[in-house]
Length: 72
Image 1 (spheres, one colour):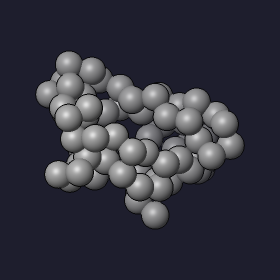
Image 2: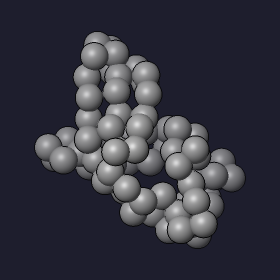
Image 3: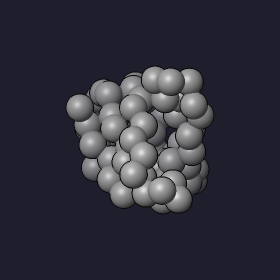
């Protein structure tokens, strides 16, 4: 398993295009400087009236397939 840590601060308005499906992925920069592409649908559970804000841990398998995303 691999774990990646990153912070997000996306306003509700900015995430609307991802939520509606117009944009299917989000690019994030991990705390270690690695750039990751994440399906926008994985962030939907974390969307609030303020948008998506917080520090997250992404867990993948050895082939970098998504396992889970958690807020810290």
